[in-house]
Image (cartoon, rainbow, N blue to C red):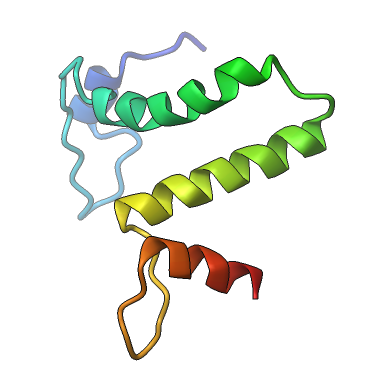
Length: 94
C-alpha cells in the first residue's frame, strides 16, 4: 500500500470519524515555543558533558524541568496561601 499524503486523506474522509474536524495548519514557526523552552534545559546540561547512566540522566533532567516549571509559575500546588517558587520547591522535599 502506497502512503497517501495527509491532505488527500482529509479530503476523501477515509480516516476521519463523523463529527471530528481536522484543521491543517501549515506554519513553520509552531515549534519555536517548544524550542525556546528547551533552550533553558540545554543551557544547564551542556556544561555537564554527558551523563554516566540513563537513570542519572532521567533524574537530573526531571529536576531541571521541575525547577524550570516552578520558576515559570506553571506548577500548581493546592494550598490556602500563595507560595513562592522556593517554598514550592522545598515543599516537594517534605
